[in-house]
Image (tube, rainbow, N blue to C red; front, side, top):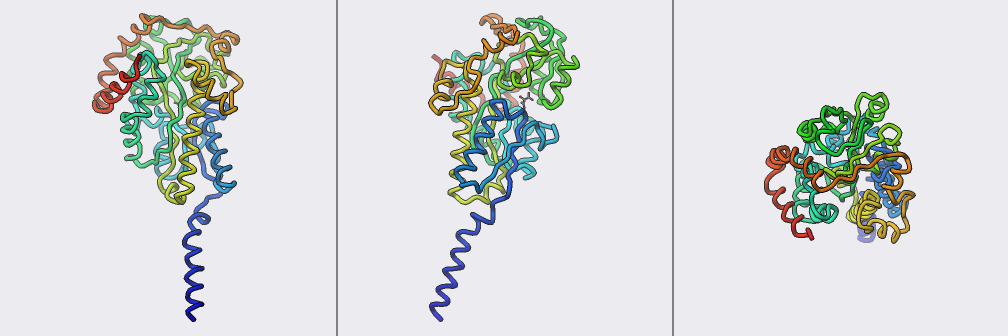
Length: 357
Ligand code: X2X
C-alpha cells in the first residue's frame, strides 16, 4: 500500500513538474514586423526565431510575419495587439509603439542623439543606461514583456525632387511619415507638408507621386528599391529608431524558467546582430568587425558606394547645415521633452555627455 502511494505521488510529481514545459507550447508563435525579411530588421527577427528553434530542439517555433500582416497594415496598433495576445512576439520599432508609450519618443527627438560627437556611442549609452531602463519600465508598465533592444537605424531623408540641404529646400515638400504625432510636428516645423501613412501603403504612394519624400534607415529603404523613385538622399541622421524585442506576458508565463532564460538570451544575441546590420558601413567599423567575428557579414557592407552605384545623390551635411535643421526643430524638442518626462530626458543627456569625446 505504502509503495503504491509513493509511486502515485512520484508519478503525479513527474507530471506536475514536466507538464508546463510540454503542454504550454503552441504549434506556432506569431512574431510581428513591419518591413520585409530582407531588411536588417527582418534579418534580426528571423535570427531570433532561428536561435530559439535551434536551442529548444525544434520545440518552440516562432514564425516571423513581415509586412505588418498581423496588424493588417496598421503598424501603430501593433502595441495593443501584442498586449492583448493577438500577437505573441514582436520586433517592433519604437516609433510604432510611441503613440501608446510616450517615453519612446525620446529616440525620435530631432537632432537630440544625432548631434552628439559619436551618435552610436550616445545611443548605446542610453539603451545600456538608466534612461534606457526607464523607457523599458514604461513599456513593461503598459503590459508587454521586454526582451532586448535591436535597431532599425538612424533615419535619412529621401525625395524625388531635389537635393535637400536646408529647411528652405524642404519648403512645402510632401513627405510621408509614420502616424506618430512627433513626426508631424517635426516636419511641420521644418516647413514641409508631412502626410502620415503606413509603411505598407508607402511604396505605392511614392510610385504614384502622391508623396515626394520619406524618411527611413538606409537598410530599410534600399531593399524596396527606393532609389528607383528617389534620386536624392539627405544624410542628416535626425532621429534613431531602436527596435524592441517583446513578448505578450501571458505567453511568457507559459515558458518554464529555463526556456525563458534561453529566449531572453536569444533576443539579446539577435538584437546585437540586428544593431550591427543597421550600422555596418555607417559607423567607425565596429559593426563590420562584429559581423565578421560571428561569420555573418551581409552582402552589402558599404552603403555610400552602393547608393552611388544605383544613382542616388547623397547630400552629406556640414555641421552648419545640420544646425540650420536643428534650430528649426528646437521648439519641437522643447515641447516634447516635457511630454516624454524631464527626468528621462535629463538622464539621457547626462549619459550621452559621459561618453562624448
Ligand atoms: O514605417 C516606417 O517608416 C518604418 C518601416 O520604418 C517603421 O515601421 C517605423
